[in-house]
Length: 195
Image (cartoon, rainbow, N blue to C red; front, top):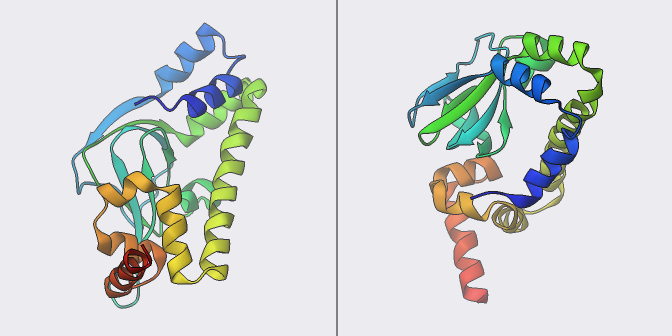
């Protein structure tokens, strides 16, 4: 399904894109298909690629000191994904990123993207837009995590990501909310009782 607001957003960001620029830019990308459960990025790996998700769902997670997976975010169709420590800090990834469903990506080497942007400064606005959006998503999530009790965090998650509730098992939703699956079950029961 086409996300019309997002399509309009992209059309505004890239309205100066010439046909030649677009052809060259897309020549830098390569399509990659991942099976559900396949790792895209391994912790400890230097992975300097940025990907756009054409279809599917990706999950990023850490392994904590107890050896448990802690989900930090999901990215779905029409979103970008990258191991941000590799891209922004030029350090090996601390996270794992896996295909949570069969996924098709368009990826580009970050260095090639940087070279393209250096030669086409008119598109800097687009890059700035994506960086700001990522930063805002991160701050909003942190704010909700600090200021909201678990019930409100869950309600906010459902409001912002209604389709993920259908696509993601409860244990991963609980993980991203920083609660146990049992707590999530109790929250849902309370919501149901309030009607």
